[in-house]
Structure formats: structure tokens, C-alpha cells
Length: 201
Ligand SMILES: [Mg+2]
Image 1 (cartoon, rainbow, N blue to C red):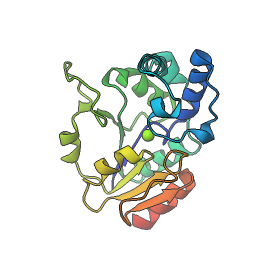
Image 2: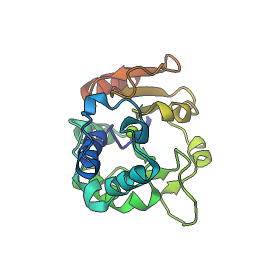
Image 3: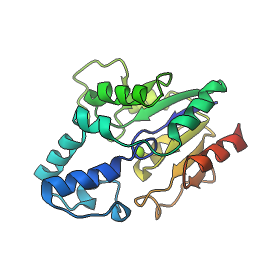
Image 4: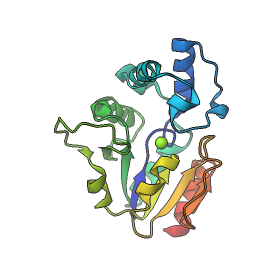
């Protein structure tokens, strides 16, 4: 199968790290379980400047490299690769965070899995030519049979893949989101994602 896997809050614990950064920078105490919106500006109730500062701090190479792995992610992804499935990590991170993101994957045993930065949220200027970056149109031109996502904002993107089964990693900001159709299945952790994957493989 061709497999699409999101990066943040699917294979690493990004939001938990952002809660620590918001505490350090602005003394905002928001427990991870209360992060209600995928939009962190809204979740942390920040003004434009604060939001920019938070995003900058969160995407510094040393910060990105420190993100904790979501339990089971690398082990299960490697199992799929061993079985011959074609796995890609597709992230909405800024294009210029490709290098540290690539390094994070390599350091967590995911050297064999390609990483693509896609402008999922319309943030990029496309002034640079990065080999592993793409527009949404380019992403929509690809085919995937299985996807793992956490963000309700990305539902519309994965809906472009014909008959693609989508595992939604349960997170506080998506528990109330309505799933678009029966191809979408909620999963509590990577073991459950693997079970859904096996059922369709
Ligand atoms: Mg994500």
C-alpha cells in the first residue's frame, strides 16, 4: 500500500512541546489535554506577535530535534516498510525546517522513509526551490491507500485520495471534529493504527 503519514502529533509529540514553550515565553499555563484548537494562536490566546514568536521558537532546529517520539511510531512504520509498503511522511511544517526534520527522522530509525514538506496551510511564499517541498496541487496528484493524520484542517486534503482509509490519531483538538465519511477511523495509539492498517492491507 502507499501510505501517507503526517509528522506533528502523529509521530512526535509537538503540541506537548509547544505547551512548554508557551509557558517559558509567556508564562501561559495550558495543559496539553486542554489544547482545544489545531490553531495554536487560538488555543493559547496569543496576539500576532506572540504567535510569531511561538512559531519561531518551536521551529528552531534544536527545538525540532528535541521533540519526543510518539510511542510505537518508528517501530510500526519500519514494520510496514519491511513488508514492502511505500511510506512517506507528509508535513505541513515550513519548508526551511526540512533539514532538522529529516535529521529527526534519521535519528529515530526512519532513514528509509522520504519526507515531503507540503504547503498544507497556505503559509509558504514559494520563493525557494526545495527538492522535497510541494504545493497542494502536487500532493493531490499523488495516490495513497492509507493515511494517518491528526488535524481536522487536513481532512480536506486527504479526502482527495481516492478510497484512502484514514486513521485519525485522537488528540484533544480533534475529539469533537466530525469525521467526513466512513473511510475515517479514530485511533487512540499506534497499536490501534496498525490494527486498522492490517484490516485494509
Ligand atoms: Mg499533525
